[in-house]
Amino acid sequence: QVQLVESGGGLVQAGGSLRLSCAASGSIVGINTMGWYRQAPGKQRELVATFTSSRSTNYADSVKGRFAISRDNAKNTVYLQMNSLKPEGTAVYFCKATVMLTTLRLDDYWGQGTQVTVSS
Image (cartoon, rainbow, N blue to C red; front, side):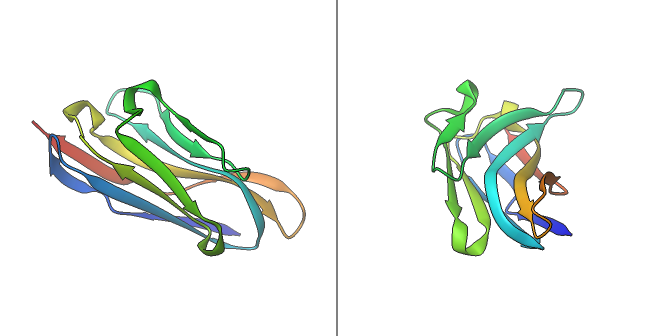
């Protein structure tokens, strides 16, 4: 019913930048919160940043001041600008959206993930 497609991952040197994008499509009436999470090998998935429908943002302490989340409601798309990347930022980055469907049901959806590798 809803698909989230991420793009923008890749290999970057420490100190470099990447911009991730996530576009939602399908039977969408509206989107509440959109956000980014990441999962490093052998670790649990963790929150990176979120952007609510009221334009409130939240960041993990580890990325504050370096990452910026933004959102284009007309395109149902969320972005994550990642600057000053560190090797510990190497992970699969996942997009998540809380979506109101045409059935008026509110459900969470995840993208397939995009690999970000930061070399030292």
